[in-house]
Amino acid sequence: MGNQLPPGQFETTSWPILHQGDVYKFNDETWTFKLFGEVIKERILSYDEVMKLTKAVSTIDMHCVTTWSKFGTTFEGIPLRELLKLVEVNDDVKYIKIYGYYNGDPYGYSANLPLHALLGDDALFVYRWKDVDGDWQDISPKHGYPLRFIPPSSFYLWKGSKWATGIEFMKEDEAGFWEELGYSMTANPFKEERYR
Ligand SMILES: Nc1nc2c(c(=O)[nH]1)N[C@H]1C(S)=C(S)[C@@H](COP(=O)(O)O)O[C@H]1N2
Ligand SMILES: [Mo]
View (tube, rainbow, N blue to C red):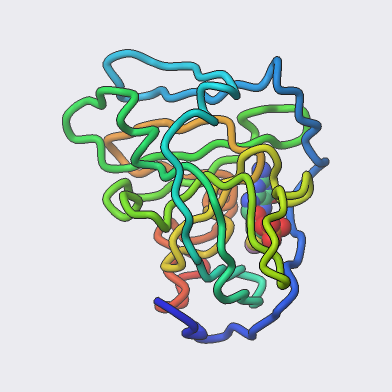
């Protein structure tokens, strides 16, 4: 997509912080990542198991529905397709919900997405990013440490769950946290799909 400003957006070079509720406090001994829903067998992964998966580096534009866009942030993380390899999903799985922490509930936040759009390097569960000096920095607690989903730039950034805790596989599309409150199911910034 590269440096294209979607309609109704403005460019920012800072990385704003935006979320509901409190900031998750990471504990690597209790943290888990769950793969569930329409799968033959559910899997619960520890922090070490997740961090041993194949990684990728990708430069991604972020578009927040509140109208800021940040171009070209380089992230390192685990592509969604690597997690997909760990489960056998049922026939006709077309959608997923990515869960994240919200106010004491590890699965309190969620966002729905179509699985077919998430098989590239630009659908990443990230843990570090390159700052303006080109130095790697851990994702800060406020941006979603230890693991935070960044969606491809063809989705608004609310689809990027901070403090990610799991993926639910689904046959039908189902609204997540913001979608329940009236935001778009498909959320393409270039088509300005903000609400539904
Ligand atoms: N767990 C969780 N993830 C979340 C949110 C949230 O409230 N809780 N807000 C979303 C919204 S609306 C946006 S715009 C981005 C903001 O990410 P940033 O603060 O890292 O820029 O996080 C998304 N992920
Ligand atoms: Mo947002």
